[in-house]
Structures are given as structure tokens and as C-alpha cells.
Image 1 (cartoon, rainbow, N blue to C red):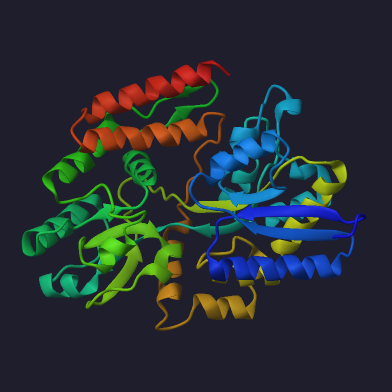
Image 2: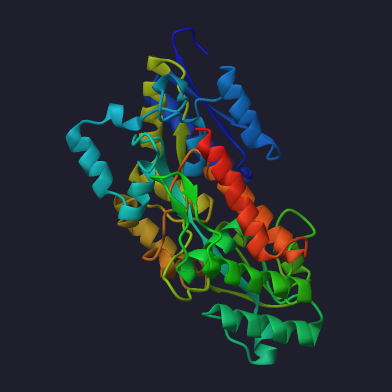
Length: 400
């Protein structure tokens, strides 16, 4: 690299096809901007976020990653900007540009870019995915089952599979997001941001978490996959159905059966956990930070957004991308399971909810997963597990 070039380093854990798309976009940007070189560097998935966290603080890390808003929140000190390690993207936008950016996104997606405690914009959306139901269509047909729309219907379906085939009828890749769905659709409160209090030990939340836990203990649902995700167990017919990311479709390779996909359950208060991943940029230098921002906007322009979101089997949040003929053809393809999966996500996107992004967001997710696990293994009741989770979160929150 020439000594006069600004370097933008991107760390990621994408698979081969996704990395290829990202690398080609980075190379095209570097060719069009000879003063900048974007370097795309693959990292091991295990321990990735801890590695980024430590590297950023020692100034040996990347200029950007692609992750959730809750990850960006770890790098923000709302009381002292000098202790905030992530870029505020609004500094590069004038009023007209900011308004155009806002108008290009669904309201809930834009809100998540500025939902941080310091009120600044620390993430630029890249793609949206969400949980869908993967189900063994052969078994469903055999048993006369239909894709469930409510939690009660999900239990009925899972019981039928357990009774007939002796395996759990349902599983879920993300326990935290399942718990959030159960709690938010119950109408239970979540957090009180103003007073820095977690509230998800409400009786409505407890009831739904206990319902899930009891079914795990009964063997109707199951808790832990044999690998990292439930796709392998599903392929091997060790489970009958599961909630997983639409981006997992390339990993569904059923062994001797047909499979189907359907929207996730929407039962009670309408709330859906759309997974909005975005570009998070870390402060390096004035010149490097501006170059990183410029690359991110290039990476998320209409054509590049269409190209990259297709590689990750996800949705672009940008209006200009959605209007592209090539993108419409991608979404509306017939007899294409990827397109069918994305339509299953779209079925609930209008009900997508954004949970508050606060300094303890990561702890909240960790403690909710721990609580639902403890309840499901019989270590504690849902009431006690959620109560202890809330106490842990509130104790940490009070220290900020």
C-alpha cells in the first residue's frame, strides 16, 4: 500500500460467498478512490466480538465491523464523548442529507440508528433479517398439520411430532429473541430507560417463559443443538421445526424429506424482532474516519446493497434498493426457497419492534438467555430466574 493512502480495515466473520461480495465492493471503492484502500479481513467467529472490543481499546483493531446496535452501545459513554469509541455519523451529514437518509429507511430502522443514550448516530443499516419457521413439510403433511400462527398452535404441532416421531417438535436458535417475542407479545413491560430499571420480570413475562420452560422439560421443545445452530439437527430429523434466521436457508439440506418455511408466530401484542445489522465505525483519525464513512455509504448504495443483501439472504432496508428491478425479481421469484423465506420475514416487518439500546443492552440479552435456560433446565422457576436477571441488570445499570 502506498504511504499516502488512507487505510480502512473491515473485520468480519462472513462465509465465502458473503466475503466475496464484500471484497469485490471494497475493491471497486478502492479503485474509484485511489487515495483510500479498503482491506477486508476475515476473522474467526469464536471470540470475535471480544477480540474487536479489546483491539479497539488498544488501537490495533478495525475501522469497521457489521453488527447490531446493541454492540455499538458497548463503545458509548453518554457522559463523556472522549470515552466513546464509535463514530457519530451525523457529523458528516448536513440537514438535507440527514433528512434524505432518514426518508430512505423504514421508521423503525432509522430509529435504531439514533436510539443510543447519547442521542447520536452510531450505526448505518446494512441489512435486515429475522426469524422464520423452518418445518419438516413431510411430517406436517403426514400428520395433517399447518404452520402455527399462535403459541398454542405451536405447542399443538410440536406435541403431535413428539408423539409420532419421538423427537422434539420445536427448537429455536436464539433463546434471547424467543424470550423477547414471548414477553413483548404478552404486553409485559421491558425497561424503564429514564429511571434505568429493567422490568422484564413482570408476571405476564413470567407466565410465557414458564410455558416455554415446561415444554422443554417435557421434551416437546428442546433447548440446545448438537452444533452451533439447529440446522444440522433439522436436516437429520432430530427436531420437527425451529425458529432460525432466514439467512440460514443455504444450510438447510434435508436428509430424505421436504421442508417448508413460514412466518414466525405473532400472538397477542404485535411485535417482531427484526434483526437489523449495520456498519459500526471506530474512531481512528479524522482522515480515516471520514474515509470509513464514505466507504459505508458506497457499500450501502442501491446497487451494492442489492448485491450484498442477496449474498447474505437478507433484506435491504433502503427504498432505492427495493425499487430496483433486479431486487424486485430477487424478492418475487417463484419456486425459490430464499425468496419464500424473505417473504416470511416481510410478513411481520410492519410489526418490527426496536428495544431500547442502552449501556447494559448486552447484559440484558445475556441475562435473559441465562434466565430462560435456568427455567428450562429446572434450575429455577421462571419467576425466580427473571427476578435475578433483573437484579443483575439493575445493579450494573446503577453503576453508570
